[in-house]
Length: 483
Image (cartoon, rainbow, N blue to C red):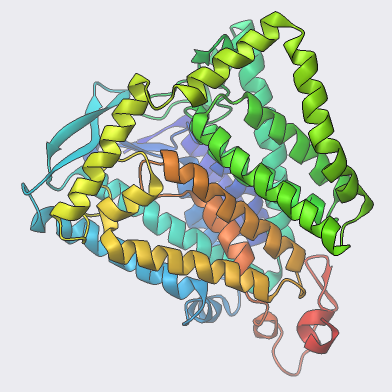
């Protein structure tokens, strides 16, 4: 194991979490999740795989939560049927079993696309006969990390309230914007070497790529689609918080800047996800107006958005150089994407992934065995029909929990987090290569699904329950009749 300089800083941050507790921990963990191109440590024994700072810091966050009074009991409560945690537990347990067993059961019976190392710093995609590989181990670790993130954040909210999680997500959004601007500025000035300390992972980092003369924004991630995925979570969360009058000045500013970065990211999958969310958001706003539930700013948004789009489009068309750049960008990232070399290659990955699903009798080849270009296909190819059903049962439980408690304590935060999690799925369905949706997804899912019932675990009978937890009034928790 090779400990990188940023790994040493991560260990120090972990010790700081143990001293200061989980509220500080969730902030540092969410910030570390932004470091997608960094490696805290490399593991030569497992194909020289890189362990990101976020997963190392996650261990310290889990320890800090386990040390909370009632933490273990609350974790078991979160995993009870029919809570979202129950379905995620089934999905993860089944996923781990597939990684251990299915590559051996179906060894040599089908061909798969998978990641192989080419040299020291770069990965390549190769076709090979199905067999156990290091990817089965690394992807299983990531899957377990996703589960641990969901459970730890759920326990955090149930015991300590949601304020730290919410502020951590908003802080991550602001810092993500900072990294994006730093990426663009250092690229333009030829000083991108200053970011090498957070670009040390053992996989391809496409920080100098461009399309139609525009730099592909990667921020602190290895490539544009990863940046777009993380930014989409944070953009939707900020937008939905603004829609619900939470920290309006802050959330509106974060949402607008994140939206502009998404538009400039040049990521095809990001454009797909952003287009779907924008359409759904606008029709929701129209529905609010029709029902008479809309605030003045929503009414203005419904009226002004199409007018602004037409005016801006007309103005841009009058400037040939800018218009041609936009046309070239759309052609490269949207119109001609499927016929491009990348599009054809990714189509082949998905076709073979579906073939693996059929060749394995709908069981899948095991987590980490198959690389695809669609989260849905990855679920089918790696975990089979059981994985698909249990995962979407989990998503359904998350959404149902947020809807059921939308008028209760943290209702606005729950709804915002649920939208952030669900809005990531369209882009993932056309681009994600594995079953790992990342820590941001599971943090948002936990915020959407966590129950408030355990307030009384933290303050047992015979002790006064405080009127505020984490800065929020808890009348609707103590007295449901006030909800």
